[in-house]
Image 1 (cartoon, rainbow, N blue to C red):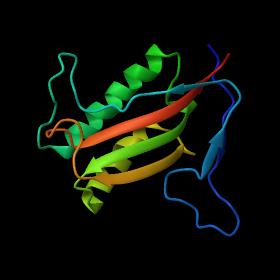
Image 2 (image 1 turned 135 degrees about the vertical axis):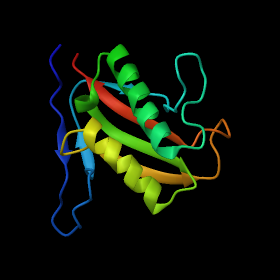
Image 3 (image 1 turned 90 degrees about the vertical axis):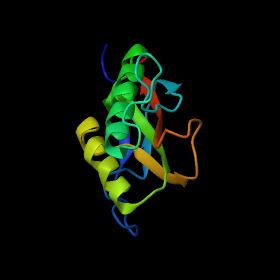
Image 4 (image 1 turned 120 degrees about the horizontal axis):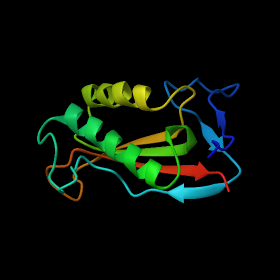
Length: 135
């Protein structure tokens, strides 16, 4: 399978260059919308209870599996939404560390949202993406 051609706009004259994400992304091909991934293991148990960095790693690992199952890859992701319980600067930096390994530059368009709770009180982060695959 060949990767679809993705056009990422990571700088726009008159706007500050974003740190590690793109302003916009587009591509021909079939859009694939992924449910948010959290730090559940294959048995449905929460990984890294109380450990934000461990949950970030597991959420991205789960995202990689979901992308592959749909015929996509990190390189085909157009948009990322992060939902973070108790958003702090330290949590932002933990996300960036894993994100920078998972996505090569330029990175997809992204939104980071602080929330009071996710579906499970032990879940600290949820990562949701939209990707594209070749037709």
